[in-house]
Image 1 (cartoon, helix red, strand yellow):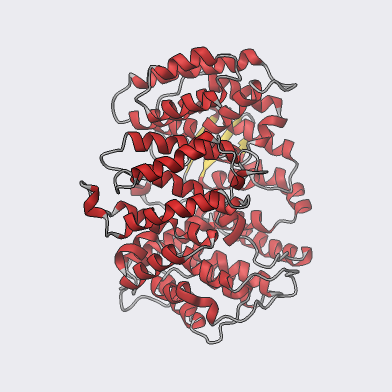
Image 2 (tube, rainbow, N blue to C red; image 1 turned 180 degrees about the vertical axis):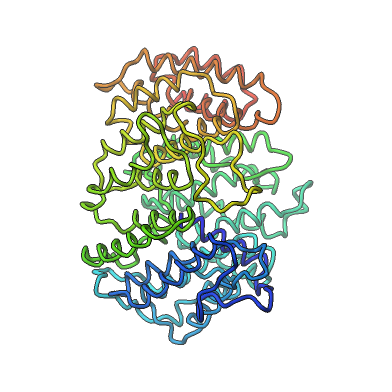
Length: 598
């Protein structure tokens, strides 16, 4: 949620870096509480100011920083009003002033500022070498350590700079990206810059590869080939593996185009000959198969280059994937944990807000915050009260706030898994007749922003929650049974329903994998039934035309891959192999055929 708010704020800052606002716009962060003359935004702004005051008197730097990180989510969109306050501009100016300090006091508060500043002009000097001005990390009383390296200042700034801005909008940004990509060896930093590298690859001239020899993208790709060979022979490492997988996919897409096809082919064929079992993947479960699959996709792209290339997406991971944000940049930098007494005090403040607020947007913000602050025991005690407004007998209420409550309830880690799975299954299995009409009484009355007629948000919220918790499928037979029935059914009509099916596809594959595993809960006949149902759904997708075809094709491609991954273990290798052989001109089928041989 906070990451989405940050991206929205960044988009707005890039549209008008200095920001041109009406001269008479009220102040946002200081002075009287601003108003725009509409009740919902005014309630958001008032809540924002109260939260800012709470941050100022917070009992510890950690509590203060966490509250400050949430404030941009309370800046309402009032761009259609001449009275829109300059919230983002003022926050940018406030952060910029603090970030110009020399020395720069590196602390949890500085991390909060770096996570909420979105002005590229402020971030670029820090991305170029912010740690040179930074002190050693100053731990707060609730941060046991270890302290992060000073390079985190640079990495947080670099992560907030969009690739397109780095490469296209500022010569200084382009120089920075090129220098780091050419000279850097740190896999974490190179992962942060991979978006910029991909943008450079895309801008190379088309046509005769000889024309591209002096350009930035081709020169990077040529340098990657020996670097990839070294990393493949290096020690097993999750971070380095993520970098190698991304670069190897790009090598397949661009190498022939840039005149280094033979060298790229030698690298890819080496990976395939080893079936991905190289020093880099040793001891990392699932890593060798992931590497081999990306290499097979790369070989296909070398053999059949696309006329208008775009970077290939990585396949769903079998490995324990390193996530740049969740595992690194969004983590507490020094192991900070809010004491239970401070967390409960924060919860009491949020309870008071929820009792008084009227509109969905600020109420949802508070509900999301409660999900972040509730201690495990308190979360378990409150779970039923949190979801009670969502349920009405055998019906599910639909409103903006109800959707917020669903999202928060399903990710409360302090709540027993079985209780959350029961809620999940209730939401997933709700039929259209069981979902009430949308209650918009808490929403700001703006008819132009009405919900789509075919919206199916309840099932989509549940599907996204399940995608984050696929392990639930292994442990809960009732959830597995529902998913098995849906996996056997045709892909439903309607864009939103198909979107939900696309989100559920990894869960369907988890069921198929379990039944094909030979384990104690496996039912081989169920695995065979799903494989055959998916072959039928692919044939149906191939016959479709029209606007909905793209999403149906996405599901079909995912199912083609799943046939290769699980068809052999389901005992249908010959049948699946023949089916894939009929589609040997399709990239997904080629990769699936290879997976069938592993």
